[in-house]
Picture (cartoon, rainbow, N blue to C red):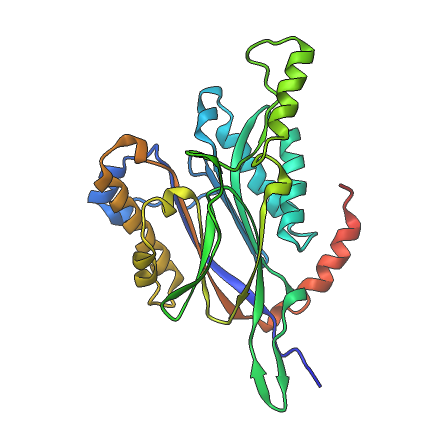
Length: 297
């Protein structure tokens, strides 16, 4: 007879810095650079119950003053709806629709990862314990995540682009800056919403097999553009998440500075998580089922 013996959870630590800070100064005095915040320039992030997410506002909107508004709203709404739904793609879709009502324009990449209690299959059979779980992920663009186990990267999301230097992105494209007539504007807007890579249906869905003590690194492209897989693995030799995330941030900033070109300076957000046991979380799923009946979307 199968019996669930425990509930697993994601334990997480985060670092986030903005390109508005002095990266060279950070590299020279690395111990005092960090700002832990849901705001990191155009980057944003959230951590909820067994769920994490990062977003990177597309910088081309900066001149319009809306790029960070979109990514921040998207993460706020993802955290809100993660209390009612389990599937990352469902959470992202609803959060995206809500964000389109919150901002005047903007676009963002997004990566949402969830360890769902419904997918857990940790059980005992004749006193033998098996710990094998599923991490569900919805990734849109060139933010993403990797899973590290036993000094190896065992899972990695793809970095999807519409074209070179243009990642998949979710956005609100309704601004009419060229002052087109209503018919022309509608045609242009419809084309943007229906372009491959700008639709929620283009979001890549992943279901990764994971185990207890696996390390999950979720980050924006400011991190992945500036660090190698080997350097990531080397930094994950500890079970101290705060140490891992600090080490990874230091390495990413150092590599950014070494490139020496301002165009390489980018916001960096890193969430480091580990799958751990938490027997106190067994009511999580039933509580969510109750909450879902309390909200009208």
